[in-house]
Image (cartoon, rainbow, N blue to C red; front, side, top):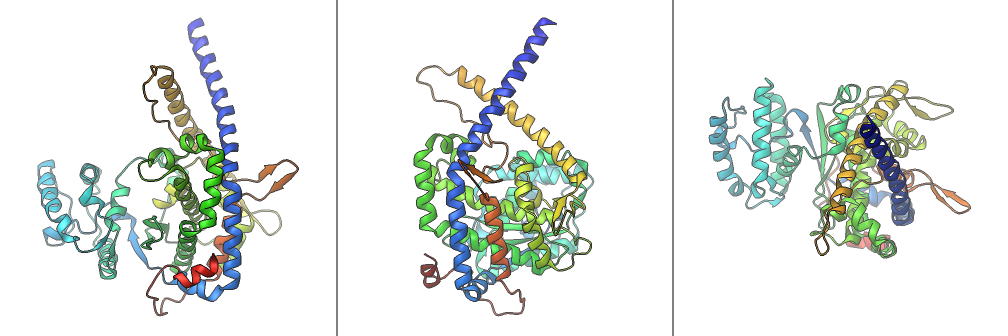
Length: 463
């Protein structure tokens, strides 16, 4: 009994240590991100105020596609070699033959089309796709809806016609079960009960943006709302990558805090061969925009009773600081992942005091469950990492640490400094997203511009 009590006491002590430690790291990450992102939001606001019509026209030009959730984990060209009839092979032997035939022509099919051909270039995606098809068969979900498949094929044809293909990569990502937050969320019945039929996908095929795409579930407020939201997010994505002052700001804060960036931000840890640590902060910031989009999608999956106008409802969501509150309540990696997979809380918002929304009690309860599970997983990973570090011999490399150390977004909440308390970066970027959204006069019949990103002349005015 004494040994068991000692073990429990040790675990409690370690958790308290990690809680204090992660709080310190979150504060340090705030110092890295908050001011650069707030200043960026100020610049974009000024830009939109000066050129609202031009900004709106450019943002509206970004193309969107519709993707049904029932087939989004399948490459859209998976059945090209079988006469185009979608089916799930009934045995593992038939599945191997089927995929052999698919893989042999996969690269040739898109050899002349720009884009990201993940199913052709990453062998491990075959394993994930094999598991997906096998799981469909074993779950009795082996009948593919022909209407959903036809809609998917239409988006596929549209992408090929535009000369930029990324649906194959999108399907590949859906096949990789690596999102911690989603794993925690899926265990919460209330969270998983809401599910949209399709989502809207906006391709980030600008030469100035490393992002592949943004996506939000098709909202009950209609495609106009979903598309304006995506286009506004795409504008911020593009500007983040091209804004020299943001890059300089982040470089300066990185130089002041190199350790916390290199060890405790996921992009710096997981993509150290692709980006410098300072460059990784740009990608981290862009993913923050994606999380805000996910939070808005979670807030407005269906029409809220008494709130029929999408723009007015969106403005009330931002004024109520819902994305900022979600960013503090969700563990890292959940809001964007949930939006990606079309999951949401039914009746998430209710009328609050004054002219604001409040997060419902049921939603807060479900969020607490998700957070507890995700936090427990992260503590286990960090305790394992600390044990590995203790065993490192002199001269040996240290193990790669787990990330998401702060357990909540460091750009969320008020930014508290000596004698000052200011709006945090998530709220400021949410306001800027709303301003960009309102600058986009959605008109599906309008003539498309030739370029979905900011032309050099307009960007010079921004700089």
